[in-house]
Length: 326
Image (cartoon, rainbow, N blue to C red):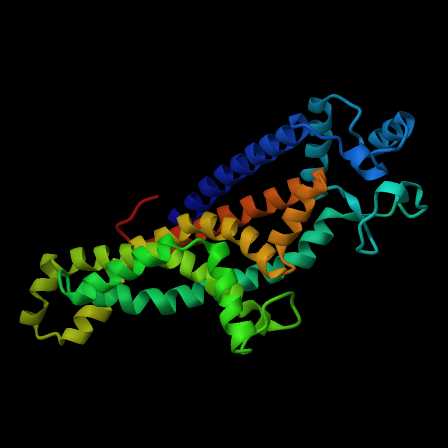
């Protein structure tokens, strides 16, 4: 019953969050300067053509009415069609506004489905790299407070958090791709192209995991149930793995739910640097082209992912420590 009530409550909260995100994004896109219709048909096009294109795109009606129409499609799973991208996959605009295929605009949902798997692959690999980096440093620091292991964890985290992701991406590209030739860096022609951008993202979120794990493990090791465990005859390795790490992992799991926003935000910059064809690069191109439906659809998709991931994290934390209440 707890799980059902928890899921119902969190899903309802998620729906409210997604609605607010869609409303804010929808409204802000239409009040900022810039006319998508003129951008599509070209700056030299006559006003009549611009007005015709605005009517075709539904931009000539009041914003509240536009949002009601968009919301009606959204509840049916329709995110609309891209302003810029036709079904063929290319972009059109400017002098090509009279292209006879301009009505065949790509569905936003199809574009997201095409690009989302690559972003999820990138994020998953980044989490794996982050754990490989963070767990040894965080566990060593937590088990040895005040010693060189603790100072090493703190120093490493301070270095990682101070490095800008765009600078790190350039340096790693020069080192591993240009100088050593070990890894490809630009575009995507297979899984190996995910390694460098995933490493950049992992280093970006690793310092938070290192510090949280170090502090949490240090506190758990001072708890009474840990200090009396040797009296019960438990070996040191079992005390650490079965009891200390289990309890110290809860704050780390909660941190991953929070850091998801940082990870998704970092994807935008990192995918642009490496020309990685995921959701981040698609978002940047949509913003540059003022492709309103595509920007709105991506924002809603990311919000939904954020909500689902946090629900999973909270359920996992509750499974580890049943005393927790959400």
